[in-house]
Image (cartoon, rainbow, N blue to C red; front, top):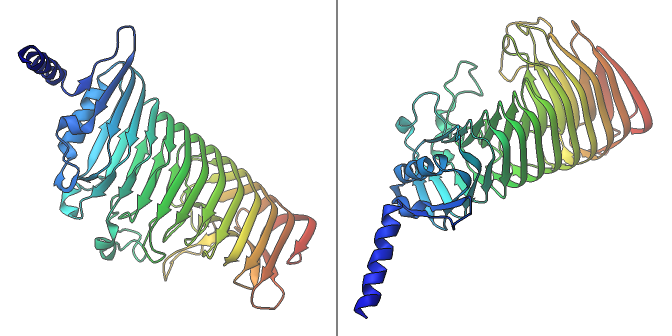
Length: 401
């Protein structure tokens, strides 16, 4: 018995000396960590931020294929930044079975800070877990719907300058601002995403993508207070498929043309989606009086079902979300080579197809094929066109404009 106890003590000492790391087997390049071994309490009350940062330091400093386990439990987390590069890690996988709960104390967020940020990491897989932004306590401080010079509240999950990223089985609840932002990323694949916030929660975009390329999002269920997915400036090669959107403001490109030196948006495919009870269906929106010239081109929206949707197909180059916009100068965003195919369902407004383009740079090569949208009000649905070269083929209800 004494020998057995001594052996156990030796093993415990060796484990503690490894700093919470499970050492790989000889010849293996795998290293596994557990956030509980770095002091995380997972009681929903104790601030576990330091434990997560200590665990990340160990993960990022390791070599080979590295894994971090976050077991079931509720982890109270202040703003945290998981920063790379992790030079010796081939891949990093975070298995998140628990719930991360955000602080509601806005003083903990330095201006410009978001809640959970990943930056400059290559080969990250984030598997599972729930991010609860606890945003309801902060929404009253969001003045952005009324003031374009507002203070922006924290986004729940932000990925910046990431490469070869996989997001799988993630849930986001009630963010203070956006649920998720993908900025300056390359080759990111997301699947089985669930996003939820009330329909009246302000600026709670589900997934915002900006200055990124090679991003695909498949099988996402998004119900929120703003755009289900928003495609910002500077994006290319974006694929959205199997999206269930509603409530919310639909799937949007934009808004574009608000700032100087915006990048073009090109190569977007949105397919096999169901949009229900939203303010818009599929939309391209650009600001009037753009400070610079940019383009939105080569976009396809196909096989999309609308259920009781306002503005199911909408190009709006007179976008202004405020009660008053001083300038009537036309938008300088050039929209071209846009394809709407096999879009059907019901519209909650009489105008089911609205193509309002810039009189300064009219839209070119806008194609609509097999569009079947019924107005639920009993009257025939209509189309509206302005400053656009549009081609209608196949069957159409409403009739072409």
